[in-house]
Amino acid sequence: MDDLQSIRLATGVTLDVQVAGSPADPPIILLHGFPESHRTWRDIVPDLARDHFVLAPDQRGFARSSKPDGISDYTPEKIVADLLALADHFGIDRFTLVGHDWGGAVAWMAALKHPDRIARLVIINAPHPLVFQRSLFDDPAQRAASQYITAFRNPNFEQHVESIGLSAFFDASFAPHIAPERIADEKPVYLDQWRQPGALTAMLNWYRASAIVVPSMEATPDRPAFLDAPFPPTRMPVLVIWGLHDTALLPCQLDGLADYVPDLTIERVDAGHFVPWQNPQAVIAALRRNLSDS
Image (cartoon, rainbow, N blue to C red):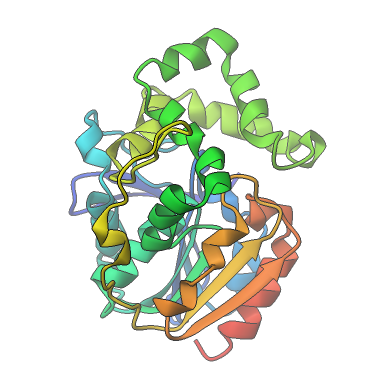
């Protein structure tokens, strides 16, 4: 098992953080998504740590990190604040930020709100906030693929998971994306993390606290004007690594992305949604090609 440091942050939460590499090397912070932990990066950290100072936290609500009670404790700005507080704890000013899934959503927000702190941004199968919200109104296939968000927001969802058991929830979470034998060894690790008191509700609260609007399939909602309003561009180099077989976040998330990301590189890889452990070598290769001077 990974050697984790338990770090109390200025935001009031304590996060378990995998720390690897030399503090003298360029810093890079890795943010996992739902329903995972720092283990998302298990095949990638050893390579990065050869010449980077790597921080891979279990974000608030996950594994054995703090799990505040309220839904409002999981709004994106609070999670971004954790990220910056973690960097501050280690005396890091600017850093490369890598995010997958929800970690990528946090990374997009951090880059947009705090461009002075983010030297480079790497996004792995996580949609740009405007592109994603627009697709939920304009792209029927993406809207259909995102209906699970509404299910996760249902306050009775935990009762559903309890009725089927965490093992079955694990299988349902990962089976659509990868063959079960590919993650069989990790299943006990995930189940242990999910069995921590309050963990399931805390993880789901990320969805409940999000402002993203997911219309139902039968709805014909008015299209919000802000979807066509000006949107601030990112100000740093951005690498997007995209697993093309993702059934939750469809390739339409790449359409029009360059309009909001002036310095954009896209690397398409053979993987589903859980790219960092489905095809870690492709992720490492893409990082090495694009972070060679960081």
